Length: 199
Image 1 (tube, rainbow, N blue to C red):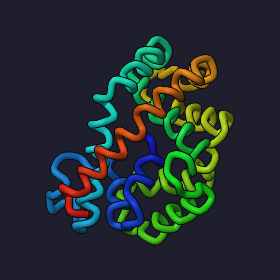
Image 2: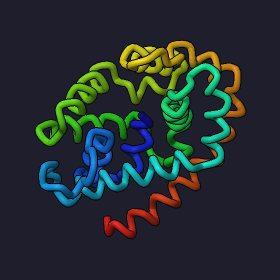
Image 3: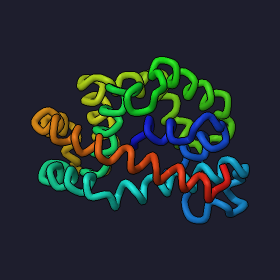
């Protein structure tokens, strides 16, 4: 669910960006013909999985999951993703050297232009994301709270996400410090992954 991070780590390659965006909707082997992915989209799905694998295994992420688990249980990882997109959006230029207000419309335009390439579930998510301007609203705690509550309504079981903003507010500095340590390591790792993917 860390949509902003996935989008920015794709660079300005549209195929890579679309593949990364739809990564959670592609099950099994992304190279299987049933998915009908272009070479760029295929690389994007693989990049998406590399981001998720690195994130899931990172000790800073594990430490935050431990803080959130009493409230969010198995959804603690989803909460971490959304929290991290908040810190990224709130200080986007520092972490990326790009402007959030320039990057987000660019990303939305890429998604809309390639809407015919999206699986049905991703099309639905993209519509909500753009209409409600999730990525820009991630800058504020109010925007994060809305996203957490929206995700909570879509979970199959009680998730605790609807009140997870309390944990973010309580541990705001500690979680931010963890993000600031994790982010440059992720960026360096993904640059190496891109070299292996030849993108």
